[in-house]
Length: 255
Image (tube, rainbow, N blue to C red):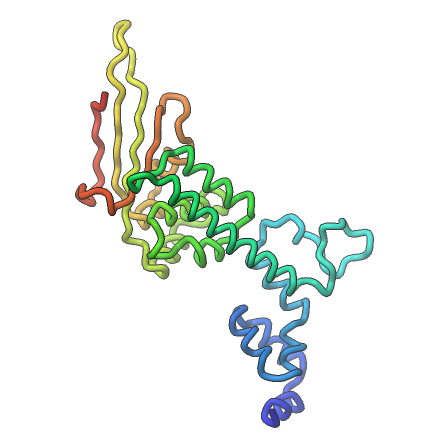
């Protein structure tokens, strides 16, 4: 205690604030347990406001300044509430991620997921305004079904507009970059001299890293469109259910 009191007496408050503002949430909380001085400083709203805005930049209510006048919209957080707001949103996101993972697992019969359910899972993340860090923390986990990893990847690309190189790096850090999925889609048979030919099936194996940096994003586009227009059905399978070689392939002629 005397050591921390000495630091308090010799360290300018602006320098201490700068140190605290550079820490992660975990380290900030740990530092706040050291003394009363650090607890009060690490609980300042200016620090937690920055952390909240960084983690969830798309939330509309965060567009208002916490120190704005009383004429601010009622959704603007109170000047004393940023830490509480961060904790509440963190818990909400954790519960939402668990619910999304359970939804995917419950609807993945034989390790495969239909395109409609896949899009529902992605839309649920958007409804909760997941941030990139949320996806990395809760969905980019190697112990989860690879289809759940793919849901997170598609959300980051489609809604958050995360660049492919940044996505690939996040996948590698989470040790899931080399996990594979098989994407299947069925297209309506073409008409030929008054006769409709057999429906065509296509399948493609790809790693999560390949999907992230694929220049034309063809497979992600197929998944995002789902069963519309000429596409009759879209299905995603995990690598655990198949022994197909990892090389990409296209097959046709499914009736």
